[in-house]
Image (cartoon, rainbow over all chains, first blue to last red; front, side, top):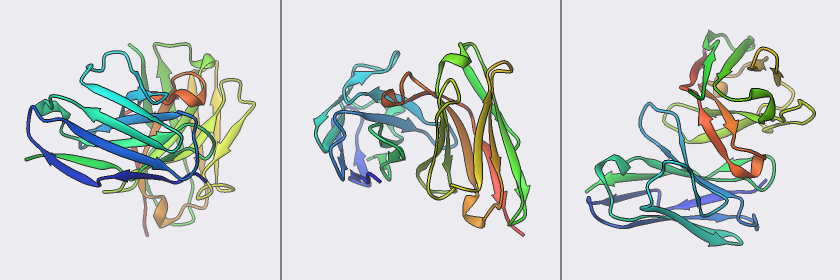
Length: 107
Length: 120
């Protein structure tokens, strides 16, 4: 199974800041990497798929990059509605696996 | 409106069974792969099972293999998860999630989840 390791586990930031979350796969996943946002009590929401493709309706302040085993989610100009938990997920092979999550908190 | 709605969760004793359902609407259900993903209380997301659009291919997490069975009815636009031999560690909110296209492209439509509690 491919293990996904996110860092940091939590981060505090202020509105207007830029935050970067990283995700490392235990083996290469050839850019088959998705990012989700989840707010308390709500279902996850797809933000980015295939490493860098923004899902329809997702603000352009979200961006993704990476290759091989290392991937990043960058959120620029943080807005109040961005404070949530973020998960990466490898979509390279089964079993599909998620990172443990990164909680983005307001400073 | 594109949506999926789960149902069938509840309280069940260890060793018991439960069948979850997911009703899809607003999209061509028969054209899309589907998944079940769960989230234990206070924990992260765990993928549980996948079924291809044609039902020809199914995958399971090791933690549920041999106990859970995924199925779908493309006429009724419904996805199911039959859960047998339930354990305490199966307690979670179970989400139905639509594949965005091939499984490589992530899951783009999620339901609100249905809670399963396994306890005596």
